[in-house]
Length: 531
Image (cartoon, rainbow, N blue to C red; front, side, top):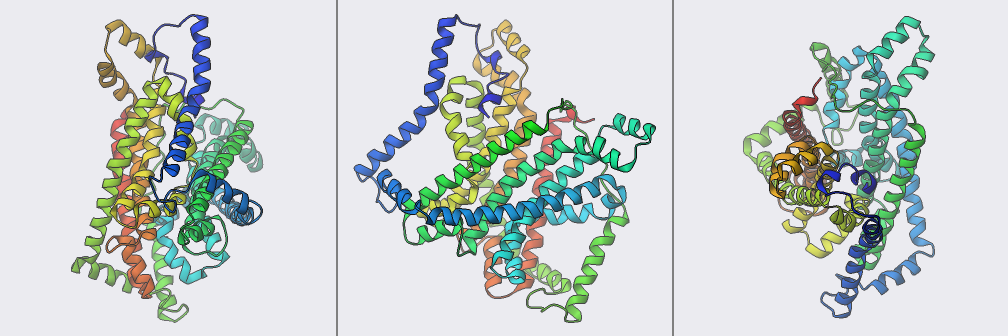
């Protein structure tokens, strides 16, 4: 990330300096990335020696190292190996299914009309919201982990493959039609190279989403795996073990990211088309798009009416609809949803605001990027739900812990988007600023923010989605008296599947509305990109 973000910012700096100054800057550039980690380590040592916090809350570095030697002899790697095996099989099934489904949707307009709207509607429900239903269907064994992983992985792979296949360059399609290429050559010479960049983007997202979802389900229902080991350490107040697991999870995330980046560079060796123009494919419309959901609802109702499935596991759609309207009428669902949305907004303001300011700082200052960038990049590799045991130990189960967790979920999307948006600004803007002798505030207001607005608003859309996902996760792992996910947990414990599924429908609708709101904000800020 640092290499990419260091380009395009020359317009913020002054004229080129002499070679001696350049050499001095290179030495400083090698030292600065280590300043923050060293300071944090020193502060940690001093805090533990001076007993500023209890050892149960902040274990000493020596204790973490002792745990690394003790658990690293076999137990830690055994749990990690189990988690990596689950991740492998989930990725294999999810990526394969997403590739086939995305290719089919991208090549068939009829499939886009019949299947895509239903797929997108189901994808709006976060993976966490499916877990209560999956638990009743598949138990809490290995099948549950596989199903959750496939659900988390198949969505980004399918949607990105669909876009890559559908938006293959029209001129190449015309050439293929003129040459009358057979189907196998059309796929191998045109569709596969055209869809490969988008497909790899989907796989990259699937890696992060799958790793995060696996840790979430291991935290909730597992007796093995790195997530279970963290829960076990948290229950025994062994925060040294929790910190060790967080370090291992971050290391695995970094290795996955680095390995996939290397693979992507080897596979994508041809020039890519410019991304300044935003392609918008046709949105499937018409009554045909209602056929699949109508058929699924009819099958669902029939399976309940004829007793094919136990109604305690899968209640009828009419009962779910009745419960949904009843909950809306008595105010229980709106009250729970309002509390969850308040948490989402609070976390977005805290985390998103901090991400925006941090992105501006790192984007405008090369020294700040060298100083803080590597540390923030390392923290980003830690899967979101890996922080749950540590946050609950430090902040308890109240609103403070939930706000910190949601803010953490919303922080990195805006940080990365803002920093990259500034890095991509044209150097000519810097020349114009120096010619007009603009000060820093004027450059920020007249050049930086308007030029980086498309990237910032794209990051805001992602932060909004991640804040909503973080809210659902916070209410799952930090139980409280209110919130839509807390309502689902209570209903699941009482086997009220009508309430669980009514809450799922509401979560999906709100997620879709938040996504649409973010997309509209992004579209208004990036009107120049519309083809």
